Image (cartoon, rainbow, N blue to C red; front, top):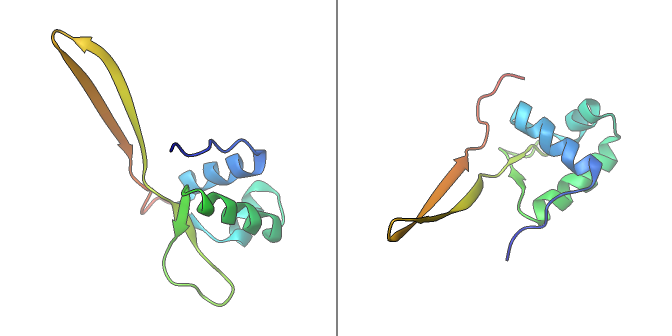
Length: 99
């Protein structure tokens, strides 16, 4: 079953900042997207529920780091000769990106 595509503007913004920063807390994400930590925490939980993000590292008090999970895409190419070619492209989670 395919994952639902996030369409809520806050969830899209959160995914974008996670791509650029690697891992963030709800407070850090809130500062970057201009929303409250509570709002970001809710939307981060929804993104985790559907498999877009995951925990990153150890929890420190109430602070939870989140990061993108590995994202993959399969592109079904047309028949080439007598066989079908499939291409699998993977975007690895941004590990040590500069913040």
